[in-house]
Length: 140
Image 1: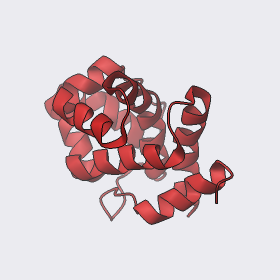
Image 2 (image 1 turned 90 degrees about the vertical axis):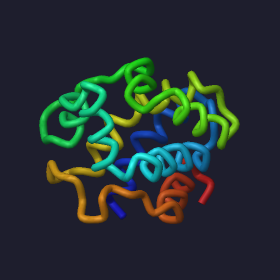
Image 3 (image 1 turned 45 degrees about the vertical axis):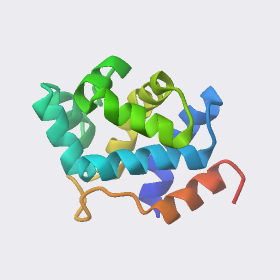
Image 4 (image 1 turned 60 degrees about the horizontal axis):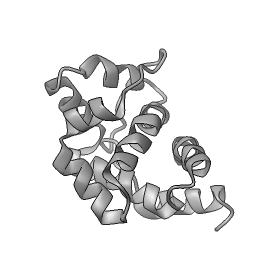
């Protein structure tokens, strides 16, 4: 559970600062992104295919996390995927891309504390993640 605490805590603090959505929406965005890209391994493949593999690899490695912009994220993942995530939770496409660009490096970093993708392929357990963020926001 410590992995979820730290990974989702990083995204939760970004969300709290922006006030754009509640914790459940954020969990849904990250969970859906990982589901639709095939977990962390699939996400890394998308970044590699989009020419940004070094950026995603930095999030998994033990060194500093390289930043990614909302535009780069949209380019790599594709506008239809970002728009679908935004539609699913009722947020603006640009806001979803921005939240992911700010938070995804930290989430991936926290999900890979040993510098490699976990055995489960890097999928969130939605129930566990919701509980963790609920506690973070004082709702659980």
